[in-house]
Length: 316
Ligand code: NAD
Ligand code: UDP
Image 1 (tube, rainbow, N blue to C red):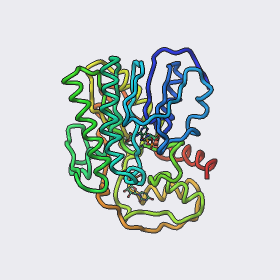
Image 2 (cartoon, helix red, strand yellow):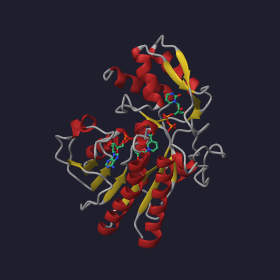
Image 3 (tube, rainbow, N blue to C red):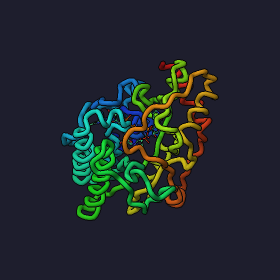
């Protein structure tokens, strides 16, 4: 671990989670003074334990639904459970985390004149009737379903970001993250990549929900973090929203076969009921990220899965 001198003071909310922990590591290695804020709902100290010895890394146990006073130059707002199992555990809290979290962090950004980036999601497109999804598409979201606490919470957060931008001139950046995977995912958080890998490593049945023809586009976490940092440091006035994801599109059946092949597992594929409102297809248009950020993913699914499988071999 390279703990260099600081250049910027950066707050990462949700920094002990899957994506946040990779982002914190990268920002610390680049010599920034990083403050990680987390309530440890789905994140863990283990994800950031190697950073705790760095003098340019600080950890604060705090809930983003409560205000906080800090002096920072940049804020990455990631705090929010991301897997359906966790965001549906306490849906009211999920809405509060997205909405009150955004208000508190935007208020902080306004007070200290910090630049602030919102980790929004492809879920703002809901079950998309336009395929693949460009940023101009307004989405097809059920406002009262079991995924709505997450989807609508994130949509209101985007609204708040743009209202603070227009009304208070806060320097905002909004990214829409598509399904991301890699080391530090929770083994038991129910997302498809971690589920399939853990099941295949343990020789348990691979659980495909529905017939497995639904599609997702999977981005390796290192590619995503590169895109996040490029967006944060992009020209002032380029607010986004900008899609960040890997345009490779796979059915869940294809993903299961890949995982089984890479692990050499004899696990059987079984089918379980498809959860309500599960999007049938998802694939980002990333022309805007290419043009404005000179960014596109470089790690193909097979390579990313190999690295993720390596990580899970040490966990399960
Ligand atoms: P994660 O669940 O691993 O991380 C979320 C982190 O936020 C955890 O450390 C959790 O403890 C923390 N947190 C939750 N509620 C909080 C609260 N009220 N106060 C403080 N901290 C809180 O999820 P992730 O995959 O790392 O996702 C990070 C962000 O990226 C989320 O905002 C998520 O919506 C967004 N995102 C992720 C994906 C993906 O595929 N992983 C896709 C789209 C968007
Ligand atoms: N899925 C699946 N088996 C699992 C977990 C998920 O078939 O064990 C499916 C799920 O129904 C969805 C896709 O995989 O169609 C992606 O699910 P995930 O929860 O990872 O992300 P999201 O639905 O939020 O894109």
